[in-house]
Image (cartoon, rainbow, N blue to C red):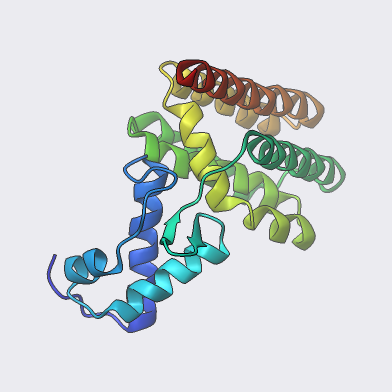
Length: 222
């Protein structure tokens, strides 16, 4: 890739997005080292923007620094994965309670419909995972709670990595699309309690899928 006409800050953000995509799609696996020179050469830049990008991803929980190894893709223990998914479920449940109190915001609902249309077109796991997060983020926005928004935003990158494991399983993307469509329809009809039930089951299914995936991985490693 040739040199880009971007400021160092913008370039570091661009590199961070690139590395994030590699992690989400599985091109970079947990424990794999991030080589600064490789990205510097790819983007035709010095190592400074790359180092800044890696620092950002370290703060956001996708990368960790290990003594004598440098920066590597962070792996998650089973308990960490379940904790992240459970926290996500609790925050979304709380968001739905706030929506029940405040009502459905039409502008955000229309945004959810637009995202749903894009989801129906995407077959790539990485892109679908990003759209899925954007859809759920709309529910968080609709809660009108800054506290919920800030807490949920901190989960974004770890959730993208973990959820991509679920969407990689055949049949899970069509199931996800169907359930998202039901949630949109129920919100449109102001059936918020019913939407809460569908969302909760949807999130519990994600946890079950991850559990099965981890069980199969552990079983195969024995």
